[in-house]
Image (cartoon, rainbow, N blue to C red; front, top):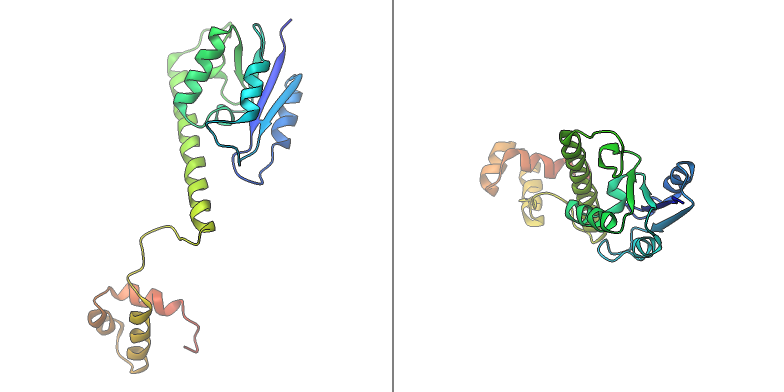
Length: 189
């Protein structure tokens, strides 16, 4: 008898998996395994338990391939391992990636779906990196050219009614940099 077994993971801390679990149960999953965002993507205990639980003839159901894998190479190797064990795969949002499908699948659809998975994985990793940097007090982008000393000098020169272009020339930065730095200061500075 074929069992539908679900798996999902939290992509960002605090996002939760309740909606995915409900979607997988609605799709017929008899059991759903989960991992939270704090789990290392290479060693997720929920995924390991899920893969151990699956038996020949079962179907692994995910809401999206992004939830299953942290990289396209991991996704492909996981699918190969499932196929070797006669376990089918079903993605609710990427039907072209499902295995054991009776209909003919256009290879272009498969490649397009894999490219979509790759893009979403890059987006997830980028957002996680930016959140991590923000949590450690770093801001994204290039470092500012306006040091606190240059800002203080720009404030003094501005009080002397010097034009922005003159201040920028004296400080060795662009007029836009001076303007941005002065705009960020309280107006009574």
